[in-house]
Length: 445
Image (tube, rainbow, N blue to C red):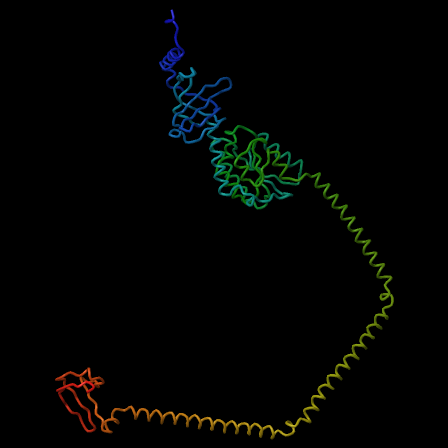
């Protein structure tokens, strides 16, 4: 009876074989959102795929060999694999052998890659942002010629600041040719010298609808624009590459029109306030000058100008007296110097100065001669002494006195040890040379 019962392992194996025997489950294409993703240290990927109502477990072995991106929770993906059963838990799952981002997911990847690239190049840097003119005379609007966006922009500008002229540059805002059309309109708008601001916008939509504003060519056209650009694309929650490159980002097309123009009522209030401040300033100035005028009217000098003249006359007299005293002192000082020169002995007897100089010169001349004679005599004495020493050391003088020199091999014999029997020697005497042969040598006998 017990033979009728199956073990858990057996039933799981039967189910596994049954599923794997179904050809429809050997090659399955699924679309879903990733959740509970886990990167295993051994290089495998475990996750769940879910849609609005259901989910299925999934595993991908050696995922790094097949994937060109790193999937994460929330990614919408397209996978291919086979359905089977994991016997240990009795749960069925898909064994994935290929995975790619779903269409929208791919767009998000492209969006992030381009955003990262342009940010690295500096296209988003604040230092490159151009200032939006506060009171524009003319505004260029680049958008679709029909639809709510263009109507909202024009009506908002006319309501807020009706003095502003609007130039409409119609363009495609979605579709295959939209990006090139937008670039062409940006470049065309930049040929107008009198346009102060450009509004680039369109209404809301999906990421596919807004994709033209995520194209690199559009981003670079915005960056290269001479005229500052306000980007108002989509709804407040929508962000495009154009928003990051533009000089100012608005949440909506209407918001872009609000940012591009001042409120006429605020301008009126500003001018009213400015006029009141001017009036108050003028009144304050008039009051201040009136006070100053009254002060001048009560001024003693202005009411008695002759007093100012008298003061100046008295000051001039004082300066005149000081000048005369200075001149007198100056003349007296130089007169005293001149008197000293007059009584000076040298100036009155210039010959004395010459005689003193001449006497000094004669004395120096005498001293010079004495020094020269002293040096000459000293050197003469030294020379005679050296001559005497040389004469005493001269071997010719010794020979003349009766001495002789023994020479061997061109050298004077100084020691008996340098002479051997049968050596040929020369004996130098006063009037000649004797050639001899040594017959014997006696040392100290």
